[in-house]
Image (tube, rainbow, N blue to C red; front, side):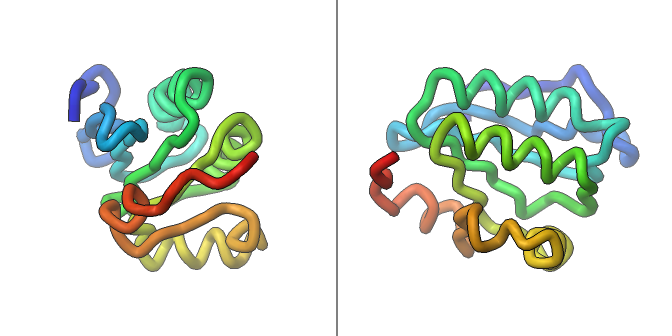
Length: 123
């Protein structure tokens, strides 16, 4: 990973954007902690900038412990701008995506390696 962001704290005192950078030609953003309207801004900025300059953006979400509707809105907005892949969503995030019905639209992969191995889809 190329850069680390240490300028915002989640509820646990950790930054919500753990790192971001290019891997195998895809832009990867690692998110962690609780993602809600109070903490989403750094992730919003990182994802929005990535979507503007990269064909594929991978959100590595294995360390996401909570997410609300502001997080879902961000995912949908990024999905509309670029090919978004969600790597390693945990139980909490998988349930949220399924409950909201966006699991049929947003592509999830069991691991970061699986998300990076898939070829880009035609948009």
